[in-house]
Image (cartoon, rainbow, N blue to C red):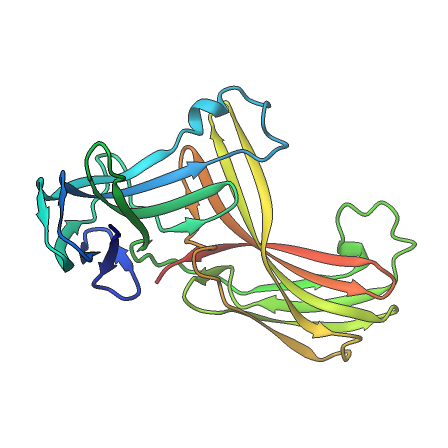
Length: 295
């Protein structure tokens, strides 16, 4: 006998905030009636932390701090032991989204070394000799609204401004100018600015804009900090015109970004790299830390 279960939320976008009621229905379908040993529903919100390969073994204290952090935990009984009729049965539910005492509902975030997820799971017990029926879905939590003021960030890139460059003699002469519209960015609005290649002795191959996440895991005894690329957008192809302002425009991807976050055990920060690739193979990169907020 085939029994299927689904969890359907009332909100099509599955987006909630701290204090909201998570409403929906559990849909159970079966061609025949059957007995069950009870139906339960749970909401779990957790922060999962892990170390990169280069950080494992550096600090023994990490292993204690890397245990999952439970933000939300709520269980409710939808039905006691009984019999389920054939056909389709809908069981409504309504659960408040509230963090555990001393915790916060951080925004949903899918990273490499830091993951913040909220899961609704429904389980129907079928007895000792029948497989239980389960269904789990993820829903999205957005952080509370915050405001902060940013400022325009002008920049000039030349061989003299490059860091970590021991021999500048072999670098072709160039001058790049531009600006970022703000160092503080709304996660719901595009990242903007402009860049101008004023001069370059070597032909330009590509101009790119790179979004980077900087994830930090650890504790007071030590921290492991890793930067990984989220996305890379080409904003200029080939030997771009000199003196022409190329607009910077980038949408922050959902789930892979979140408002900048700093706690005792982990941090999630973001940076933008402006990258110019020359035909000579030289790579010119300028790094800009940015702060993400939700407004």
